[in-house]
Amino acid sequence: MAGALTGRRGDFPLDLQFDLPGEGITAIFGPSGSGKTSLLRAIAGLDRLDGWLKIGASDWQDGARIWRKPHQRPVGYVFQDARLFPHLSVADNLRFGAERARKGDTRSGPDPDRLIALLGLSGLMARGVQNLSGGERQRVAIGRALLSRPRILLLDEPLSALDGAAKDEIMSYLEDLVPALDIPILYVSHDLAEVARLAQTMAVMKAGRILQSGPVDRLFAELDLEDAAGRFDAGVRLRARVTGQDRAYHLTRLDLGGQQVTVPALDRPDGSEVLLHIRARDVSLALARPEGLSIRNVLEGHITAIDGAAGSPFAEVTLAVGGSALRSRVTREAVDALGLSVGKPVHALVKSISFERGRD
Image (cartoon, rainbow, N blue to C red):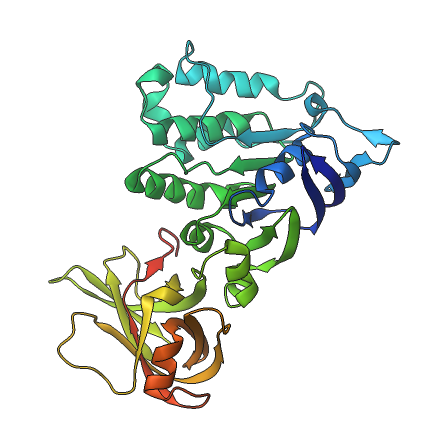
């Protein structure tokens, strides 16, 4: 999918230039007010901007020559709130999605029974939606959108109203669901942990523009990501392999570039790959391996770059750890006090690691 759309939404200027993958999850990431929802609304045809838009081989918009109205665009749209029909059961809400599929459309969609199973809805079909939890309602909303056989699925911060357990549940279902789909999914979020876990590609937005787009692994290592986020909260996504389980303490041992890290127990076989997300703010530095600490994950590396604006109290230190890059957020005072410089060996103390679950 690709497009070049310009215009205004109220007093807010938009200049949206993009060329994104035709499958998998692309995260639309940026701070509040950056234009993420405006991008989705333009794709759905809810707001008309100038320019062109192509989804697959189909032109949805091209100047004054082509304009598909919203009801002519096969789009699945899931909002922050599920927006289900409160007087209908789960089954009837899903049936509405299937009936919304355009007549005469020969495209194949997901098998309804398989989709219902993948979203864990089989036991909920007879229930009224008012009796569902927030996470269950969002799963029904996703199912309803997909049963309409869309060419693209738009998810506008679908987890923002959910608590931690419900968010984790929805992300697990999405991880199982995405391999069964052959359409692009645009996932709006300002949560880097969600992006790290779910997305393969991301587009970074700020002030109505897409600053950059590309693989999540690459963009997570670039400082521009932090600038777009409006906070020093970026990090890196690293690939590790399961090497064993510590049954006594319910931990999983991982190999990360020849060094061991441990995380809460994962139901994964030895040798399987795990994607780790380590935020810069969760990494401290020491000149020697410390003793007597509760932090268990200590990695050896050397400094490859130090970046910090003069007007900020913080500096960004990039480390080479095995064959991977790790980043640490420290104060500029700490850089001077420890004598940190490029090439200096250090120990990275990793306080928190998030990880992608559920796939071999």
